Every structure is written in C-alpha cells, then in structure tokens.
Length: 152
Image 1 (cartoon, rainbow, N blue to C red):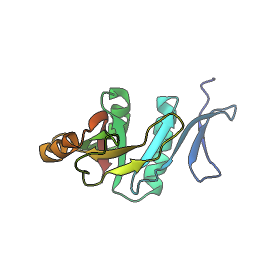
Image 2: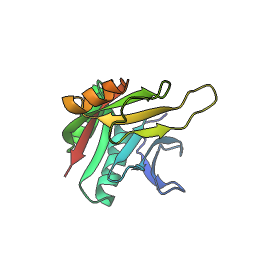
Image 3: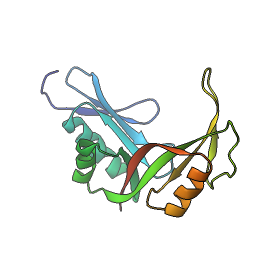
Image 4: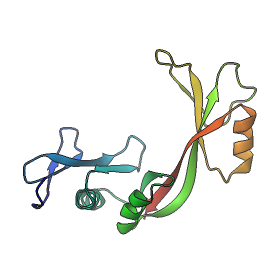
C-alpha cells in the first residue's frame, strides 16, 4: 500500500469506508445495531482516525463503543477521540442442559447452530457482585470482558 492520502466513501449500507490511493478499502465504520454504539474496523491508525472523525461529525452524542479488555492499542485510539471508560461489561454463557435454576434478568436465548447446543447469554458489570452471583447460580461462566467507552 502506498502512503498517499486516504479518502472517505459511503458504502451501500451507509457505513463509511476509508480508501487508499488505489481505491482499496482499508477500513469501515458506522453505527452498531445497539442504539448509540459505533464501531470502527481499520487497518491503519490513519484510517481509524479518519473514520472516527467522520462518525463523530455525523452522529449526535452521547456515543458509546466497546473495546476488548486488554486491547490497549484500540483503547488508546478511541481515547484520542475523546472517549473515556464508562464501565466494564462481561458476557456470560449459561448452559440450558440442565435447565438453570434461575434465569438472570436480561438474559437472552442464543439460537442453536449445527453442532452447538442452545444457551442463554447475559451481560453484567463484573463489579456488580449481586448480578454475578445470580449468573453463577444459574451455571453461567464468563466468556469475554469488554470496556464500554463513552463520548459525551
């Protein structure tokens, strides 16, 4: 890839695309299905910054995004654009065989795929010991933890 300036273009789904001088897509950004959340997937820091600036200019605050716990590079990228840590969110998986004794608030059933048994999923702040206790009582275990960031 050459180091020529990047350009922005709209995808058919109204996401933003970052293009290099050869019109190759090197990043994509847009709103998430989760209201108020945005995401950027970029191959370079310059593409990330260009896409993030476009989203921030277009969408009203507050805006949120999620970063995998431990992804310090992506966390720093969002912080360059004024995002700060709002909370941590852990995704828990709850097996349905045997059925859980309790169903934690906010849990949703994940449809089965070939070879995958159906299960319940629920998000919780790991600092919320009462919520985590209910999830663990239901047989839930943590799958991944994300840092939720906000820009007001």
